[in-house]
Image 1: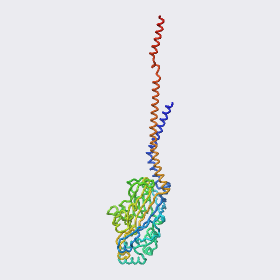
Image 2: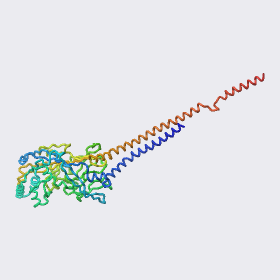
Image 3: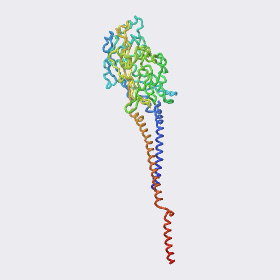
Image 4: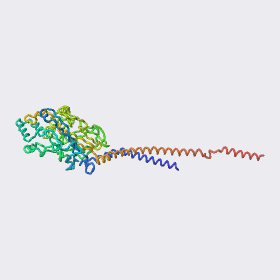
Amino acid sequence: MMAINKSKVALGFIGAGILTLMFGIISAVMGPTVMKDQIIKNTVIDPKNELSYTMWKDVPVPFFMSVYFFNVLNPKEILNGEKPMVEQRGPYVYRKRLQKENITFHPNNTVSYREYRRYYFEPSMSVGNESDVVTIPNMLVLGAAVMLENLPFALRLMISATFKTFNEGPFLTKTVGELMWGYDSGLVEFLNKYLPGMLPTSGKFGLFTEFNNSNTGLFTIFTGQDDIRKVHRVDSWNGLKELSYWRTPQCNMINGTAGQMWPPFLTKESTLPFYSPDACRSMEFIYQRSGDFKGVPLYRFSSSKNLFANGTEYAPNEGFCPCRQSGLLNVSSCRYNSPTFISQPHFYNADPVLLDYVQGLHPTEEEHGLFIDIHPPTGVPLNVAIRLQLNLYMKRVSGITETGKISEVVMPMIWFEENGYIDGPVLKTFHTNLVVLPAVMEIMQYGFIALGLATVVVAALVHHRVKRARHAVVISTVVGHPSASDKEPVKGSHSGGTQEKSIMGNSEK
């Protein structure tokens, strides 16, 4: 009876093991699909996706702009034709607050918005204060001199006299706060009155005056509702499908996203294209290496050497010319024709000759390279560092005496880094939902498979042993208790016959 019960129990365990094994296999097969569907659901730009929509709308993670000034050490010598000497000052760090407003969803699965940015000085993170005094080239004078060098000589003399009237020299010595956010200038007031539209600002003049409390333009991007591969991709900017700053259709293309998030399911073969209104062009980062950020796996994408290469070194960039040395992007066409150039900080990845023209520059990949660390399955950036340098092309212009004997040089003025990283509750939620839970699910899937296999094997062995034991009992029973036909009838009969014969023999006597 006990053997029969053990057999039934073993068969029950075999069935349970098979079910467990099947559940584990189905989970392993379906798990990635379920996870993928969940990522797609939470990646689509939709107010119903509370967490992801809030991250996209208000960008709650810490975001900073660190500004470094190239303080000019020898302004008088530069006017005499000597090589400029600079020292880096900073960083002057500003917390950057981003918020999307005027959000409007459209029937074609796009959404438009304006993103406003505000900056707040962070003294505890800065090396110095906004009251620090630095000397940099005066863009109003040296930039205008290059812009107006083809005017008749008499007009250039008049322009030079105007500079003297408003006490504008070739170099500015101002506080960091004034250079950043603007200072009063009689020349600016004069130009805005008699030559309206010549300058980007109508009030104070500063390098970042137009940045603070401003927006980056009207972006219209895809929500990914119909195709997740298109999520965050720019459909238009300020109503434009392409730009008009550059010389070729390829360079005027508005490619990629707005530079904050990318479509999910990135691979090492993927690239990160994005459009930057500040750089007036689209850029593209390529895969560099794998790693992790506070326990979250990532791919690092960085800029290639071709990012700001000139048309001679990289033919597709010919449309960004007229070019100078490789590593410089001429942005005069989108900066009121001012002779300004963008590069990577300290001329990193640029023609080495640029370093020979200026003393005090020391480029390194760690401090001056551009990169985006991104979580491949979701396309969410974990750690970002976009670093750009603003340079002024300056030289001697006859008739404008403020230029003295300045040698032709691309002069670094400032460089800035915009960086942000996921931290705090957002990182914890991200890590739990997208790292811990998938790992637990994967462990459970293979755990069910292992448990199912072990249960089936052990139960099968038990069942086999029970069957053998029952078989052995049957054989033992058969051998230990012979049947009536197998007893000793011959011996018994023979004995009886002898007895009978003996009796009969006695009677005969």
